[in-house]
Length: 494
Ligand code: BES
Ligand code: MN
Ligand code: ZN
Image 1 (tube, rainbow, N blue to C red):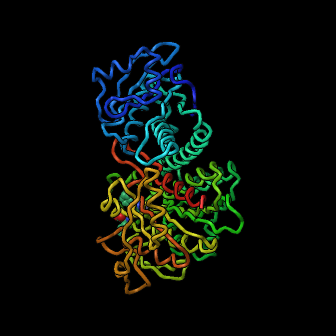
Image 2 (image 1 turned 90 degrees about the horizontal axis):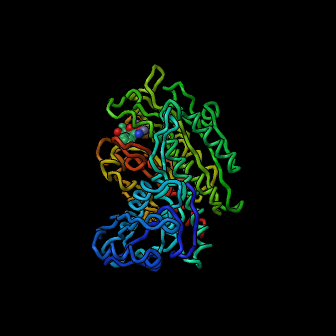
């Protein structure tokens, strides 16, 4: 889907369909009024009849005139005088969805004239681009026949006032870069475990590296052994797929700027290992590499945006399988940090691969480290599917991540990390156990990771509830690429 910014006289538009926002009390904005005039008052007549419901996202399709706006799609922005973010998003999605069923090859125009709470034009443009790309996303590389959409708009033109055009073009380019990153994360997440192996993730990183001239390094089992990554290697030992530790570096900042390090859990399939998972929905454990996918997606986005910041992506990747070589409950392993871990449940594997990656990243002398992981089922119970869980003892990082999540409509919610929870990880035989019982499972998992992050500022995002949707419409969400990209963009500006 192509995007463009137009400043054409709204009264002299030629397009397949123009989407016109209708404000509270059936009022039209400036552009809408001009379009109405050019169509001899067709819009105001329809509105006067009360045919458009006032609920945000209600739509009404009118036929305009050939050689002008062939179709006019009215979209209600809601009944409130100030449009809320939520109403704006709903209206945008509904408008694009409806327009997408009536107009295909022709340009789809969206008029921008509504002011939304305290959000600026850039925010509105980004919402429009991301919503359009979300609607256009398909994952059909593994279907022998592509599903035919009756209509699929090829391009979307965003109509803005002339004085905003230059800034709007930049914003649209940045939003497109973000959408490209989200789509990469979705594609990798949606791939099945037999295709998206650790080697596949490594190749995805390499091709990203070639496209954007990034430094990519892939550590093999031998190198992990030399580094004494006993915890990561322990998880990997049950699988025939070779583990990989992927390191990808984007240097948009100055040489002396400390990098932000993103660490993504890359379990390409999580059977649970010897503590094997029940069969129902086990297929969804192909998504257990969504943390890794979000790291690659975010790096793709910021590289295309050319953000002035240094970022290192680190992805520990392997499968979690049962086998004659697999780890067993009760096994004790020594992590790269030297701390020993009693593995009471082989299904708590994410923290085992992450802890060695978190020790490894000390070498980058990071300004901050964020790890992203589909870490616990308990996180889904605690927060559901709307907020990712965020853990950090740094109020600064917490503030920055929360703000980025709100701004990008990819929210996270801060969870506790009090020392008291550490008790649960006591082991009579090793420095710690890898599980802390059912109570506060997402918190004790974060506590486990915290023991490997003493050398830098750190935050952990548990995305178990937000990285994909279940059910018939199942699929990877691309989250939290928007949150992370927003977080890095804000830091790059400081
Ligand atoms: N990948 C899972 C977490 C998960 C489960 C994410 C369900 C999304 C949906 C993780 O490796 C895991 O299995 N965690 C265990 C931890 C437990 C054994 C302490 C869990 O949550 O059940
Ligand atoms: Mn598991
Ligand atoms: Zn897992």
